[in-house]
Image (cartoon, rainbow, N blue to C red; front, side, top):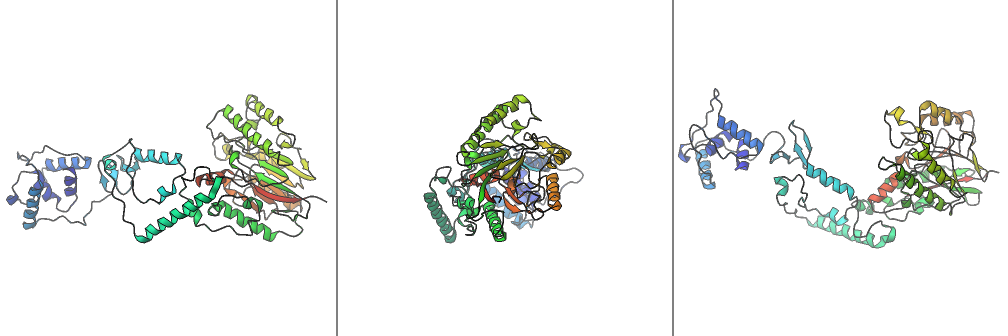
Length: 525
């Protein structure tokens, strides 16, 4: 058989066994095989080629001899005869050089890979199809995650002989492992029963990351007085690094806040103040942003729509309509709503996109309630709005990736060159209470992809005099930098309320809510 021929080719006595199995010799007349170096054995070459290809050689001739039918009893007698003749014996420890191959080209050391003709390992079609199906189903049952048994491959495309074989029996579990699995199952049942309506899907399907959530370190009590963290309803917040980072930032800002501070995450209620609630980068996932604390003013700093190149202009306008409708609904809860555009909101960039696309968008903005204001300092450089004596200034301009990376993206709204950004940001007025931009300043916190021209201008403002830089800078764009920090060079409280990553992480664990950020600004006088 093929597997026997392949095995005998990879043991030290392969020449003797090959001669024994492939040539007509009697068990009592075996002699060591002496190859003829001047004339290579065509039988050996034929067998080697077919063994590498995974084929059988039913016909074989060598010196006019005919092949005898093989049986296990004949092989046993041949093995004992060869042992008595002092030939090389197969060793159980002997292994072939290179990665083992099962069947034609499948790898045992790298499951899901096959060997290409140039010696490189590439993915099999069946494994890619299985992974594609796994990406569509983001939430996996916790019981399936805890199951340690291996299942058979039911994928019809790209099946091989090794995949068609029945799966091995599940490994035996010791008492400790079985007890741990039972405890995890009980905890999962408790969480499913106590979660209520906060879960996006039914309680019968739990995510694999639930195990981490059950054992996570709880958030500090000092941070739980912060309204956004107190508004987190689901029990998995303690397992998410973004909530832990926000908690550390809130505690640090509270500890360094002076009694006479004009800006803070939470000013005393006895002090006349305005509470701002900030969100950004909702990307048409605004329905998932349910954790929006109460306040006086709501701020949205851009990227209302998704626009990842998967829809036409009509679909993008429909997303904008839904997002603006959500802002109009929020305007019923707040005294005023201020928002700017982001690089994904291409229908609001009149400079790069035709009027046939942008006219409908601005017509929707014109139909918003009177307490909803759209800010665009690029089109209106002197547009400074006032709310109860506090000044706000909004600019949607971001870094041009065509200039920095040489690539043009679908989400290229308000992308401007370095010279254009320098000219626009130099028009930012002094003594602002709130500055709204979509891009963060470069180098602040973890904003590795911010705008250097914006950062340099704000630093120059702080150097020219105390209080010239904005008190608060609200932005988004950099999804991974969600949180609040105080800029050490300018003294500005920087608030990045990008919701996109937070929404995606929560979806993976089957919950929703996100987290709008809040801060207070004292009223002048």
